[in-house]
Length: 386
Image 1 (cartoon, rainbow, N blue to C red):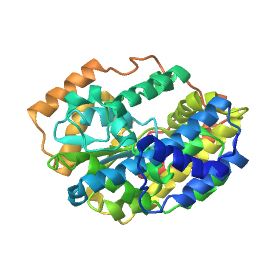
Image 2 (cartoon, rainbow, N blue to C red):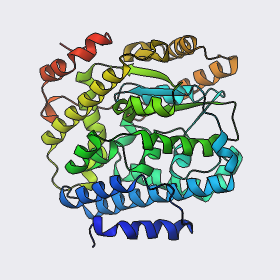
Image 3 (cartoon, rainbow, N blue to C red):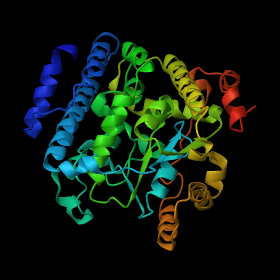
């Protein structure tokens, strides 16, 4: 089998053949793709299943680029869609961001990046048409295979085809997000991405969501991803009036939980990854994310931020959402409140089982985690394990 670097042209051809399209848009992704493929060749040790899965991720991302360009060709009015005061949920993984995202998305005043549309962008069809859409059905099967390959993941992080999902699915079009190094040992890529200017990636994000949501201009956009922590300056360059909800939780709880989440998929697609080295690299990655976020927040208008503790959110999610709305001047409604409450009742915490983990199994020390996140904890009044 040819290496990833030698297959870049093949990946493009496969994407073109699958969609019968030619235009990948502006050439702002090639460097990232080249670095990623070289790192996959020289750093990673993928299983045959892993190599197949990563190849599919690359081709899927290229297909999404084709679909966005074709969508804008067919719907030139999408480029004029205004994305005003979008709400971004930003926090370390495992801090309640997914639950908050799913709850707020029940509000009919919001629109989000449904998993299937983030992967196969097009103007959002009426909901009744989804079950007959080939892209939707393919996404259903893809999610099924994810849980078949990694059965523990459902108890850790839930993905549903028809629900809003994380922005990294769109960032994949520029091959710039944290999930690549979560899935494989790609040290060269990780070093490159640590110094990557994400502005072009956010411009791609904007172009994609304009296409998806331009038929519903009155619905506010809702986004969520931990990757936003790494380059808030780029986010504000593209979305200058963005509203940021940053979630906070004890990092001694967060870091091993993130390790467990990533390991549930990583272990199935990699050969011989050392669990302790992975724990160390995960700690380094998310400490950098928090430091980047703290530096970027300095000097920004505090009215664009709302800080939410994990404990407050878990104690009363509905009250927490009301506080967010009040802080940002977002209109509440009886319908939104009813839908949020109904969804919460139908989707209780741990309904797919408990997620269990320890600090020690990842070769980490709680005291070191406390020390490395001390400045963050003090700045945001985060309760930290002693």
